[in-house]
Image (cartoon, rainbow, N blue to C red; front, top):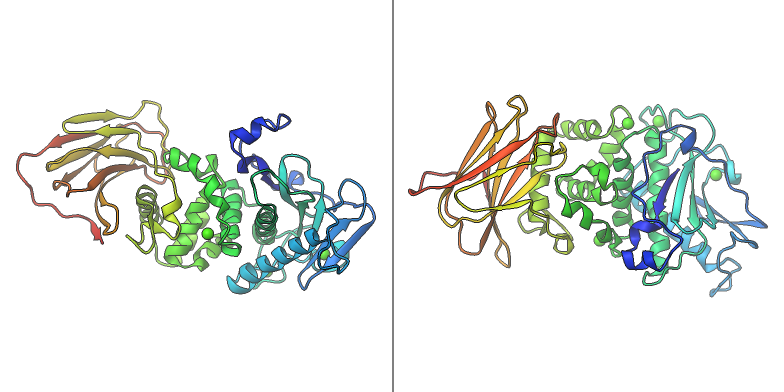
Length: 439
Ligand SMILES: [Ca+2]
Ligand SMILES: [Ca+2]
Ligand SMILES: [Ca+2]
Ligand SMILES: [Ca+2]
């Protein structure tokens, strides 16, 4: 069962107002086995409402019944119509415009081949969830590629999505788009083990279908507060990765990562999708890290930008260095292959920055950014990879109004190695060459 925790939408204030809800982390990884499977729900005095691709089931009485309001007096609760419209919009954008595979057919469960949405009382913690059907999985006959664990699945959406301070119809629409993406994912690789890929891409789908709502911004602060940690810690916030990939390389890349997930898992699927475009995973993740530190609003400083980057939080720095300075990572500090350490560099003269790693066999990348924000942004990026455990960059003095950041990124195969960063001021201006400069 893939769920959308209401909890993640709410700040602590709201949590306090809801004594029944205990804080909980993002959903734990559900193995693609029985735990991921559920029978179709039974609803009291069930009725259904059909659209071209979807059938919405709802109860006419009892705890599962949605609000009965029917402003257009067509005999269908407006709540049900809103869910159906959000589902059809998700289908049009994701399947028809962005060419994702259609969901695996469900052998007429729910009455016919349409994808089924059940409006139900999901209790206090969930906006919606998705579960795959308890039947055999295999190839999705609606696609040309040969899936191995494509499964049919169904959505459940809460029957009373009304929360203080949050727009109810926004919540309903986003929940439908989010869970619909999970149904699509079940139809590609229901056994994909990388939980962050399920959730990051489902939040990405919310943005594709309902770009104007922007609720994903609420997920971002924990990731930007700890850029050294892995996506597994913040699977919803990890949507910034597919958003960045889609904006910089085209939305088909975001889809192709999931198509590659048929044969590979997690980061290996990302690697495979990039290779097909002659792109290197290492280079792309280094550029993504620079984008995290810069978070410019596109097209400024592309590719180190997001369309809505202006609304992103600033990435946290772990330390601030002047010259001379020595900064040592915690001995046991774990730097995830998908994370990076960011340090602020505060020098006004030319300087040399040296990175030394304790494990000489693990290559790490040292980057220095000289960034001028504002109306006329400019970025100079310097980069060096460790050889025999050492990388060194010689920097020109920063320009006026420029901030300087040091980024340390581990190799793709290893995190958790300690390192030392040293800064010394240079009396004479050396010859220097940025890796690239963006205006
Ligand atoms: Ca069906
Ligand atoms: Ca197929
Ligand atoms: Ca948006
Ligand atoms: Ca996979």
